Image 1: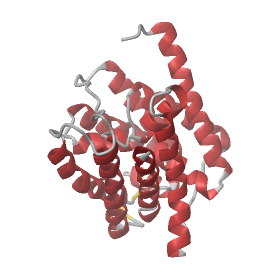
Image 2: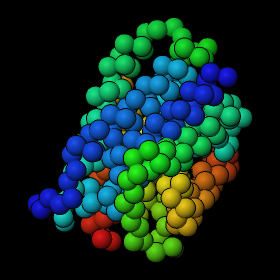
Image 3: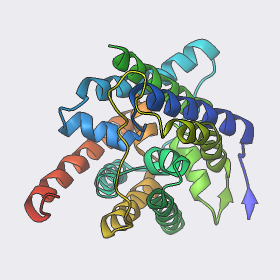
Image 4: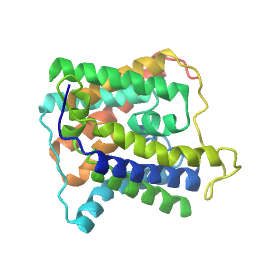
Length: 137
Length: 142
């Protein structure tokens, strides 16, 4: 195994900041900050629609504030082709809806709650993602 | 009103966290998923950082009656490890591994005005709608 581009400090710090967002949303609004659920509900459900919409607006504002205040450019690299992007988007939408959660909902919130469902979900999506990268990478 | 402010601020903080950790970058995420190639373990540190902060608060607040700005806690009640969880998560992982985008970073990256992010998010919304449609037709409502 060869380790490359490892940034443990910024990763851990960024993770703790995400954790702060999760606890603010939980203690304030009583909800879990699972992004797939929030986006899906903003799209198909009238319940909490404004809250969901504002969370999404915040998600987009986050990187803008980060760049504005730190003056640090965000490294961003997509190498996939457009058809791959579209197919992947569909699979992520379908999968997170059927599995009721994504990296944030299952991987962060669910695991923090010690939910067996979320631990299993996280193991499964990590495995299929790693296999996918191995096959197409 | 307060719940709306909290929603927006939570989203902003979340987006800042994705930027600081660079998880907003699909290239960085693919580096983590490339376990058998040149591996970047950073994503695991992001998850650990987030869980270390949120788990104790969940533990302390789970028996409280009310959140600060809502009438009650809304927490998923499902406990069973069912077919949907396994098939859904497996499918999500395939899509995640194809590009390196999961829902949070994909939405947040719209800030960077990259056309691919827009296409990804639109396809993801299409996936949500398609599943809702199929759900109505073949799976009886619970």
